[in-house]
Length: 220
Ligand code: GRF
Image (cartoon, rainbow, N blue to C red; front, top):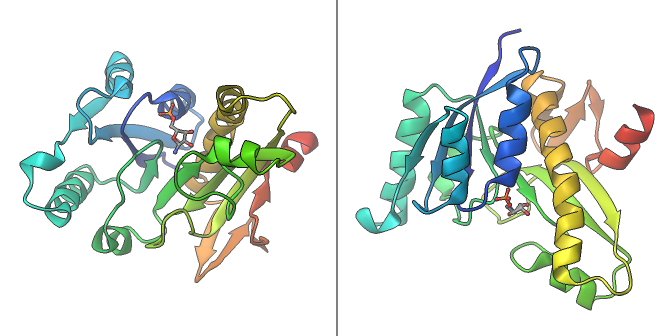
């Protein structure tokens, strides 16, 4: 099977992006990163992508009359590059409904909480303040409702009693990198499929929580 063409949308640091770029260098990995797009020209991730020789584009929303035109430009770039899967990894801008419907079931996001808990921002602080015993990350398909699309994979980590939001964020980020790589690999190898709102993994229907990353790792 040929590698699927993947684009990554970022706004900042790009550590999830780099984790993906690294594994894609392996000839047997089923994806190739064709393009990294940022809505922030100062995003550090752009420098990282460039250092790997990946095509980068940065677009400033201020140069477009509205959000629709901005997203239209991104979708035109994605089409020109024949992108098959779009990964939003720390992309801090909401995609508009037309964009999402144009790339239905092709946009994959990583979010640093155990959704449906804590969509949106400040997830680690919210989990600590709620005295949760665990947190984690979720990889999901993007739908029109923010951080609410069908869940592909979830992985959890413990929250310790004295955790700061930075400490928890580091622990979650470590699992994010592994999860994103695993999920993109399964999607690009066509082992994960979505029909209507149900996700199938190797033809078995998944629960609403998706694949348990922790369980998957125990099996390996
Ligand atoms: C990650 O925690 C990701 O889950 C969230 O934004 C952060 C991006 O980090 N959506 P990075 O840019 O990949 O380092």
